Image (cartoon, rainbow, N blue to C red; front, side, top):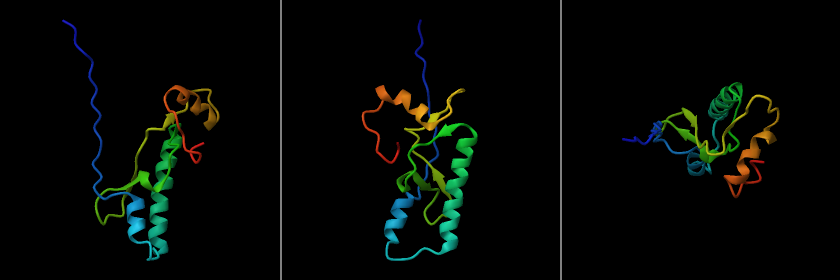
Length: 112
């Protein structure tokens, strides 16, 4: 009897929407500097963690920053489809794009 290998990916449910959706709702309202700095600090912290672990996200945009809950100030980084872990010996971000040639047919210019 052969058994098929199975994988299960468990992810956190983030019900608060994206940073983009919140910003578009507040388009006519200026955000307080403290609120902007808090969001910025969370994003930089997430990228710092990734880079310490040799992971390139390669798709930072407001649509990929998610709020934990509605009316929450906690942001989480998501959408790791283009993420790549630099292997030993790879020194530059461009090295990480070599594996994409057969996997992806389009990469937005802001990612390159």
